[in-house]
Image (cartoon, rainbow, N blue to C red; front, side, top):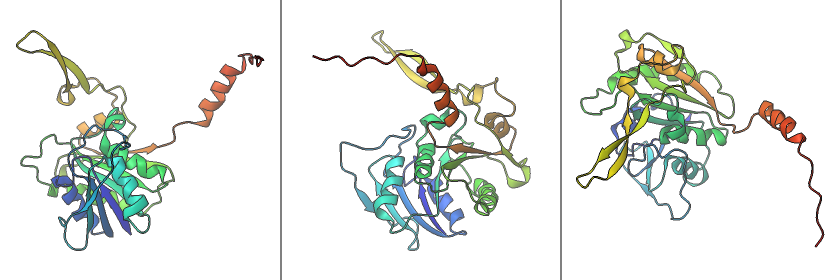
Length: 264
């Protein structure tokens, strides 16, 4: 089995090395990651400057790896279109430091990489750890949890166009409460702007991460389940439009009369 690995923390982030160590038990690894951190860059791609894919020897001789001066979505596209001779069987994005929950799916570069793979009809997952600081992080803890998730997912066929968001609690395997398949809790407003004054009286606005202070959430959503000590698994679909919405809008707009073409 061939895996394409990417992330948004950059190719030198320890999370990608930990992910590779797990995936090597399941198959052959190709790595295409940004050359620097590209967090919260969403699904952007690079249009107005050339991309460079620099081969790197970071993960041993059996792992083909490139650092790209682009976004996570760039990395998946470049891997698919150019760097790999054949499409991968599975794309894995991560392991991200910090969870990706609820509305994060719209902002996260980690999530966007998995979504990009789904556009190619390639099964994909994004993996994040419920830990905000990499200092003193013992990757053996999330690696053991991820292994059991992968065993189950790889034994089944993920439907075309679907990608999976996985969040791992930072707890030892014996303290993990299990796996919860949970919807995104889009009610959670994790990030809020706060105003700060500079010495000259000007106000600037910064985003504050309120993850640790949130108290109101859906008890069945991904945020609550992760907080309770579960591995959360959320299947997502990359389709922008759905047939039921198309029909609804057709009904709405059918009442608008056609405009007659004017002759000049």
